[in-house]
Image 1: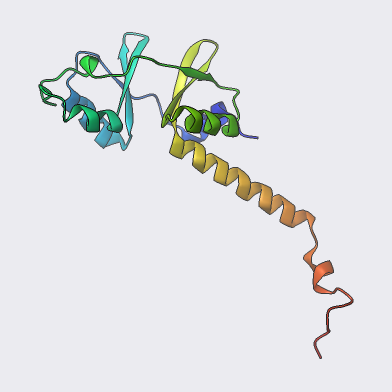
Image 2: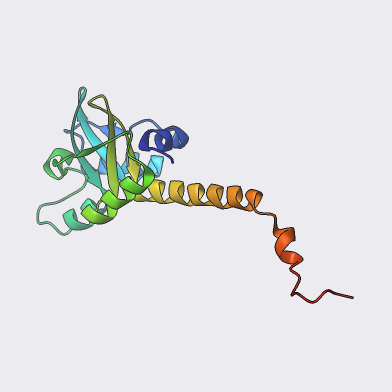
Length: 155
C-alpha cells in the first residue's frame, strides 16, 4: 500500500512557499505559475501558515482586502497539522474527508517534507486500485470461465 512519502516521491515537487510579508497578489502569481491550489507561508525554516484558493474566495469579499497590498500573513490559516509520512493513502483520504481538508502537510522526523492535495491522494488511490485489478486479472485464468461445461459450445 502506498504511503504519503511514496506519493510525494511520485509527485516529485518541492514545497512551494512564500514569505509572510509578501502580498496576496504575489502568492497568487506563484500559485498560478506552479498550477497549485495552496501555498505555504514560511519565515526562514519555520512554516507559519497556509493560504489556499478557497481562502481567496472568502477573503475577496472581506472589507479592506486588496490583493496588491494585502499581506499574506494577515489572511493565512495558521492552524497547521502535519500527518506522518507513513500514513497510507487510505488514512490520508479519511483525514481529508473527515476534516474537510483539501491539503495535508506531510512530516517525517518532525520536519515537513511536502504537501498533498486531495487530488494527489485520489489519483494515488485510483492508481493503486488499477494495479490491484491488473494483478488479480493476471492470477485468474479467464479461459476456465469461457469453457464452462453448461455453456453451449459454438458450432
